[in-house]
Amino acid sequence: MDLVIGIVLLLLVLAFFTLFTFKAPYGRKTMSAFADASVATLLVEAFLSSFVGNVFGIEFFTNLGDAAGSLGGSATALLVIMAIGGSPVNAVLIGASIYGFGILPGLVVGYVMSYLVKLIEDKIPEGVDLLVMILFLAPLSRGLALISDPVVTALLSNIGRAIAASAESAPAVMGFVVGGIMAVVGSSPISSMALSAMLQLTGLPMAATTMAIWSSSFINLVMYSQLNLGGKRESLSVFVEPKTQVDLTSANPLPIYLANIIGGGISGSVVALMGMNNMASSTATPFAGLAVMFAYNPVQQVIIAAVITVVIGAVVAFIVAKIWHNRHLPITTTADLNASENS
Image 1: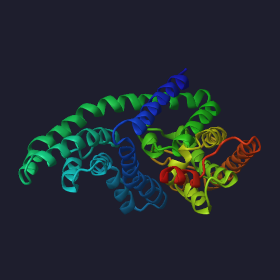
Image 2 (image 1 turned 180 degrees about the vertical axis):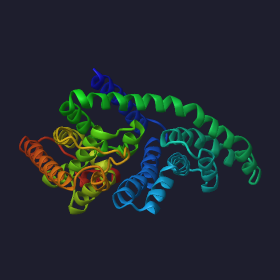
Image 3 (image 1 turned 90 degrees about the vertical axis):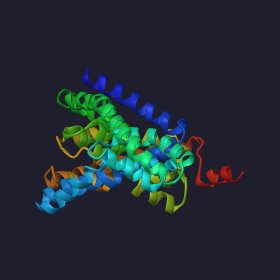
Image 4 (image 1 turned 60 degrees about the horizontal axis):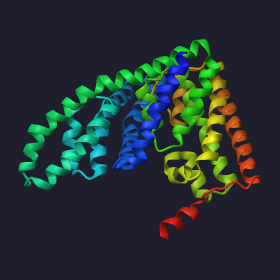
């Protein structure tokens, strides 16, 4: 029951973010900035603090990673405001005003305040606008963060706890569901790192997520190559960072997401049955995530899991691509996208 509740709530959250991305004003720019902020802060924290700092016992890197992670909310608000068109100075001012908050309150503040920032920049004389920003928008930003933080944190942490509770009673099922969903998220416009951090996933669920997304890189590589969606450049790009080809992936959602659900799900189940752990909740990314796994699991176990999940992902993707190709089901290539943009 815990898993069912957690997954239903998770799917509702994903549906909201998907609708926001494609339907809200500046939705794609906002979510792109959101993903960039998670890379610049949470990924740095996970890699330098959880991996380099913990594995090698170097306090300097631990402190550096922790410092980067503490700026998650500030960086998110800053980048969202700049992405929507606010000036760098005012973006930094708003970001600095919510120092210490997480990335989701930062997203709320950044999106709401971006409209006020642009309004003030357009309507109030230069010089006076800075005073208005300092006296009104900075306090308003922190107040909004204070209000939104407990609400979103309670909702998302409850989802994470429900998923974690199911790990004890049904680890294989949990691994399949979470691994499949997060593999799809990792190939979508939504940031898998930001989502896993917001859910505060740790332990077995986070290990399943990390290795499913590791497998997803090979799934996407094989799918792009076998379906001839693009050239070598696009195939390599989606392998290294799926977000670089999100338009092409979104144009072919059925085959690519199907392969990711199956391949990521099986990989997640295998990792869950192996009893692996990952205590860094923001490492839902292929290569850095794999590196961090060495901090919490025996080296030999991580290597075995990495090889198994690569094989699973590649085989599943090859089968799905062959079925899609043999049945002559529709696909959209890079050339098709370019032609539609130029028409």
